[in-house]
Amino acid sequence: MKQKTTRQTYLDKGFVCLRKFLDAREIAICQEKIREFIEGLIPQLPRDHVFYEDRETLSTLKQIQQMQNHCPWCDEFMNGKPRALAEELMGKGVVASNMQYFNKPPLAGRPTPPHQDGYYFKLHPPEALTMWLALDEVNEENGCIRYVSGSHRDGLRPHGPTGTLGFSQGVTDFGRPEDLSREEVVHAAPGDLLVHDSMTIHRAEGNTSASRNRRALGFIFYSEDAQEDEREKEDYRREAQRQQEGKI
Image (cartoon, rainbow, N blue to C red; front, side, top):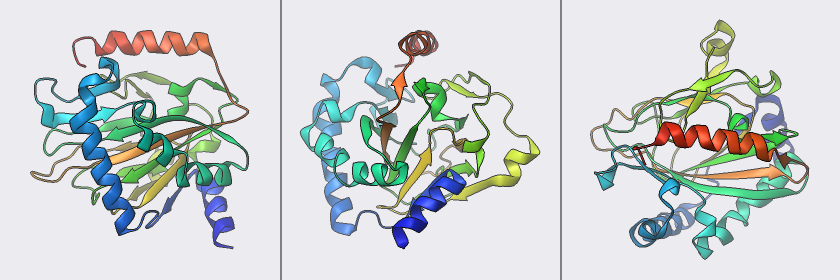
């Protein structure tokens, strides 16, 4: 019954939060493995897989892409509990697309603009989900996620340039009364997992804390039925690269 309720919540709202998806031991292992990844592997990664708020200040690391391709532990971890949950929520087989690291460093982490992940993915049909695993306590002070409940049923909204590294496109008409009235603020503790449909509008404020990070892992899974539009994907990649020149 609990699993059915979790899936139904996800289908109805376009997102769901699973408290204590990882227990204390599991999250401690996860935090240590990510520390090892950051300290040992970042110099070997492609430049466009690592983003900083300030490239000259290593403590402002904000995003790492495609971690599963560079670390056996990351690949095994992503294809364990997260993949099983993705298949349960989508009701079909999935393809593991991307494992990511996110942070909003203290006083440096900037807001994440309202967006739909599906705009970036360029999938037909647009069947995908994103998971967000908290590694720190997250609330309004350090930039918790805000979801527009039910927005996954409203189709793809217009997007335009944001100037935000790592989130180059955002919903251009966000802020309508129906957006704000349905927006839900979700706090998270280490080990909590948030999951949202690729069409669900979401955003986050910046980190205004003087000392608290806002670290998390992201997992992107495509439906086994979804196909990338290679032309659209390449057009988006070129535009994102143009916007990021000198920033990564």
